[in-house]
Structure formats: structure tokens, C-alpha cells
Length: 172
Image (cartoon, rainbow, N blue to C red):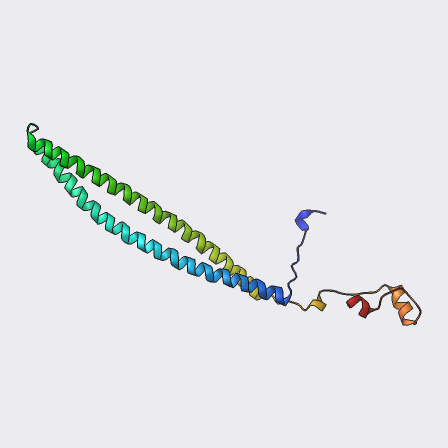
């Protein structure tokens, strides 16, 4: 038999169908809460990025001002040495702030990946639930068709002794 022509039929009882729907509904509820939680974290990261960006602008302006002062100051003397120390410190603080901003941005990217994954999973679960909603479960007795052999039918109809089961025996 060619496996490409294999047909799989899933028979769900009303209880199985209801249980499956309940499980998926619970998973959807969990995902909705998770998506809201991730979106809040992203908003927090955005606020943190904006705050850090404003801080960086101030640090960069200070760094730039000190660099300009270094160019304009005579390179001999105590003022120049003190200015170099302030410049080096401003540069270090600015670079540290840039590194911190990069970490925050990476965290936000990771949150966006989690959000995308959760949204995709949410969509799949929602589609699955919609598919399950369309299924109309059949009663268990609709699943089986019982047919006795012609010989058994004739022996039973003639009230003769036989080892053939009756319909009620097979159904039970």
C-alpha cells in the first residue's frame, strides 16, 4: 500500500472532544496572559531605553565638550592633566552607558521574539479550537456497523442451535 494514500480518521467521543476543547481553552487563556505580560515588559524596556537614551545624550555632550576643551587647552600644565582625567572619566562613563543600552536593547529583542512565538502559538491554538468547534461528535453506536454472516443469520432465523452470537451479544 502506498503510504501517500493512507487516510487517518480520528474518532472523538463527546467527552474526549469536550476535554480537548477545555485543554486548548486553558492553553489559550494562559497564552493571552503571557502575551499581556510580555507586552508590559516590552513597554518597560522601551521606557528604560528612552531614559537611557536621554542620559546618553547628556553624557555624550559632556564627553564632546571635554574633548573640545582638550583641543583648546595648552598641553603643558596642570589644567591640561586634570582635563585629561575628566575627559577619560567622561569617556569611560559614556562607553559604560552605551554598553548598558545595548544590553537593554538585546533584552527587548528577546522579549519581541518571545512575543512573536507566543502570538504564533496563540494563533495555532485558536485555529485548533475553531476546528474542534466544527466537529460534530457521533454517538458511539454510530461508529460500528454489525453484520452477521449469511449462515449465522439463517441459523438464528430458523431457531437452530448455533455458536453464532446474536446482535445484542455482539453489541454488548
